[in-house]
Length: 252
Image (cartoon, rainbow, N blue to C red):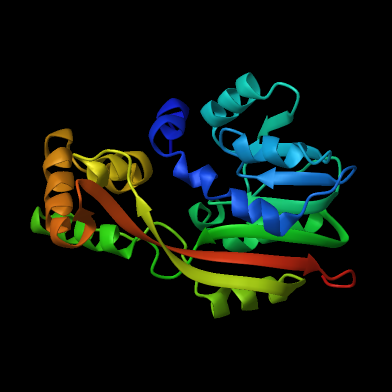
């Protein structure tokens, strides 16, 4: 999908702001080589670089990479697809925040990560876990179906057991895992759910005529008012899966 990098930074900065604590799990060190997979507009890539590590950021969105390059010109950024990237180096660590749930070809991205890690290298990630934004997708599904449109799940939100098994299958040992709820305040006090869906859920609306899109979004938002709106602010229910794993040298 096409990303609006400016809107992402302006009204959805919580994505990378919450990623600060994921960097703490990474514990980057001076001299290390680290790949930031799905780097977005580069804020966390720059934070990792402050440790003295040599960081490369990749993202499938050209607009995100353009923004990252303009704000952090000293860092190496490149447009690359998470399922097919092939770089001429291996890394001490791969870091990924709020990206892997967008990649439904989960086996392909783990294969690429494994092949770009040095033996014993670490993978530190956070992604949406099972149940993530289920309030929003449930409301949108109902609103679409009321208008006669089919709702098809898009994101990959695995359970801890599912993702741990997948990592082990691809040659990783899981050393640390946290699966937790994180209620998240949305930026727009008037239309927080609508704006969130316009930013992150545009793929659900691609087959819907323009005239029906906003009414569907507003119906979905209104159905959540009793549970997701308080004190003049909109909230959504994030469920996050955070993992620290290690590449087993003799796997694959």
